[in-house]
Length: 460
View 1 (cartoon, rainbow, N blue to C red):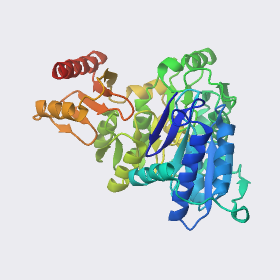
View 2 (view 1 turned 90 degrees about the vertical axis):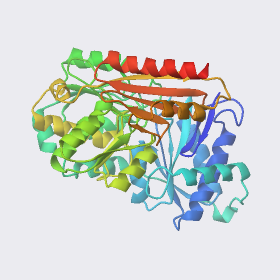
View 3 (view 1 turned 135 degrees about the horizontal axis):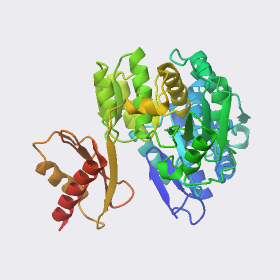
């Protein structure tokens, strides 16, 4: 059993012992701490709650909502929803904050509390640490019976979210409708099965082939939208002669596409393609994290704009985007952040912008993909002896490559002329993650193995 307490939320496996898994006691403790913290920072007494469709969702929801009531907070319950929809609803309701009940791409035995501030954005480092401190102390009173919070259901945000997307100047419903796309969708039996087909209908897509779109929380495959988990969708695209396939994760903040031949468009290229379209119409800066493909930098500089890198983590990308005034950004895991809607990864807005781009290009999706710089990524890790000085190890590697362009913003990233390698220590286990990218799979893997060998020699 696992319980991970981080600055952005609490996640863990359901069942087991308190403090070792995400049990009712842990859910109540951290919900109370967050509600107390957020209530002190805002004049509002409201918190928005929404959940994905995983089996434990209703149980977790009942505990969270009851706990918030017990400290005198009013709850606006969106029911089955998505992470970006809750992010939109928080400022829409002028709420003090929000809690999204989802473990994102984690398997079905997991769940989590994702914590939002009054802007509908993930809480920052300082706020996250304070919530963790309060959870350990719980040094405050619960509300008396006359001061308990109220609960109201609001299922209007599906339409409000879609209407906001349709109102974007760069979303062209007529172009999408005239393209006559035939689209296959895999929503891993979570809330994307509600929201993605509804969005496609609003965009004028008349032919939709649904697979795993019943929001019952029974994930038919590993819910992370990677190639090895999307074989059913690939087969469906080919079988139906669809123009493309769309896959989202359980909380609909990650997005990837399948091409008409059943091959992956590449999750790293979701942000690249959407950014390319946005940059063609509204030039400006872009941001992605240090572990994302170099192709976004290429597309951005080719358009005459500036690219910036941020530390890994959505909150870090958002902070950098605000700092440099980026018009679009995100992460290479298929996370598109488009500030014209809100500062959060949003698969729904990504779908609308991508389909507009594809429709206006007049190309097949494989032809669109072929037009982008080609890079290949390799993802590895080294398991280390507990207690090893990982920071010292990274410092030694930095010194070894001191004459090569590098960044220590988040671990160590070494930028060779045609390849890069990013070394990051895990926050939850004694490993170093090693991401590398190059112009061929062989070169991406070769540079990774070179770095791994050098690290192993240092350890010895």
